[in-house]
Length: 270
Image (cartoon, rainbow, N blue to C red; front, side, top):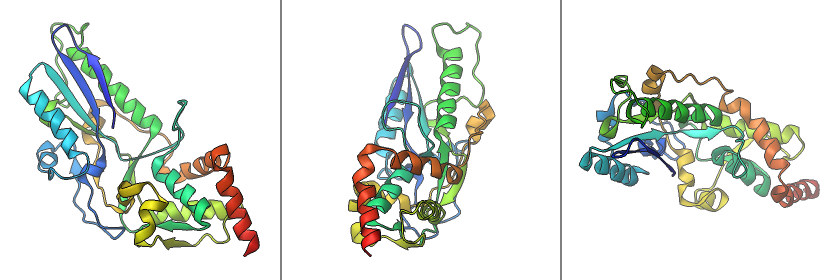
């Protein structure tokens, strides 16, 4: 989780806090989830989320601090699974897709959590950055040190307990993602078969990224309606179409050479 802090004026400060759609997720272990959809235009439904949901404890700290101090203008951004290759110097690939690719290289097969029926929302890293820039620009235009005295926020630019912003651009199932990874690794001659199997439950955390790995088997339904009203228009490729570039990035990463060699050796000795 990250927090972007910006100065509004001499007396007030604002926080753009990064949470995530895991806060609305259903722990269905890869099975089909409910059809319940969270919209950022319905903050009351979001505020009814159980306090023990992922991220919620920190979200509540931000909300309660803003409620106690009117000079604090806070908003909460809730990205879904992020895909695409970042342009920064560090951690440029998607944790969601990358963990499944690395597990496939290490284990010599492509897997998913449970039957892979549950769906997650996704957002391209470039579109997510656009969302932050849009929010920051609009918040500064109203509350910033150079804001005009008669500046009025859009009715959709909300803060505090109403200031939730989803950045989802589409949905995909765990099975669809793993099938695409398997197809690509098989085509490249790295896997013997593109067939997707399920991780044994007792190996999921060690194969992926610890206790939080189960989020890949959750159902998460959201709509970025508030950001759309403010002018956000995601236009980058969808998650499935970006998987091959992520596979290539990982294969070209020297840190993964050992995994790739292991997979080739295991395949050729079978």
